[in-house]
Length: 114
Image (cartoon, rainbow, N blue to C red; front, side, top):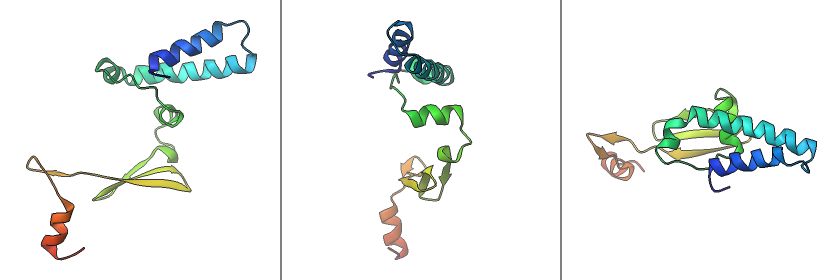
């Protein structure tokens, strides 16, 4: 979907359509509930212009932020994002000092480490 609003309308249309199967209606109802909760929790961001359609992981983590799949572990240089016990990735954190971006390459040259 293009936006969260489009996704919500699509789910409402599926639920209202008499030709939609019962399992599909149940799925749409569950998804609609999660989308509406997401909108409630992210009202300010949506009002500011962020209308992206959240993926399943975003919806799950919005509803269950303490689950292992949703935890972010911070390190001095990286945030370790755990998707599952077998899949994780790191994302560089850009620290700021006195309003300037800290450059790790310069730090390695200054300390003589690589």
